[in-house]
Length: 357
Image 1 (spheres, rainbow, N blue to C red):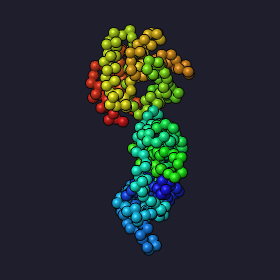
Image 2: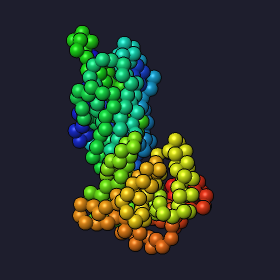
Image 3: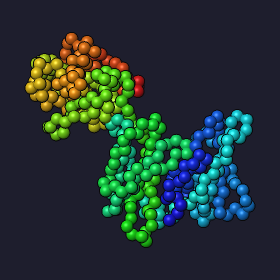
């Protein structure tokens, strides 16, 4: 197999390979402090002179580049890059390993790029098409200069995975390949990189609305008809949140709830960055349970949490709820966008909420 299918060294001054196909190579290198631009050069196997490189550009501002229109007969290819400030070159010359293009057979054998989606708190969901009966190797990289691919799962049976603890503010990419048991096949190349995705996290402002800064806080959700618990951070990370203060004994609430449910269900078909959380003002848990059955969204538990906090009552006091129904709209940072959206144009309110993200 060509060297393009291997994980590249991520030493301090290494240029790493991000992707290759039959005619192009995508590379990346570490960002150099004080650099205003980068000069990128390359050479190939047809060059007879030592240290004879062709300048591709001396005005690059990114730490990633793709060289197209390469001829596989001229491989392998070697790249080097050096940073410049406003006056002169700075730092050391960075050089790649010898890099090869994929052959036509290799390109035809590799899988399609996986699809990555930010879900929950500091988590990404990655899925791909099953084209082999083998297990799969999954790799990930941060989308920043010089970051190499790292294997995060060597033998997955399913065609999807969740990667948690993505705490960097950088974007992430993933790639996948099947593990083959046929020694004659060698290693099938990795797929092209997935789309870039940024992991979401619950904002401190939103978390502070809940006791203990939301640490360990749980919300109720429904699996079919059964109620289950979900971590607050996973439920609301990166989302516009609508706190719905309501109760079954309230006639106007019972009128408004079906309208909001219809709007919510329609919204969820096109967007997943908005969530409604029911905050009950019912007098007993039986009434709460009966009323919540008619709702498609999340809910604050009726009882106190494990630390003796009554989250429902705390939220009612925090937002000075003295009349219901009330729908408080918060942006992803936890700031109030609308004190009460009942009877108002929710579309325009959500536009304002999203513009503040």
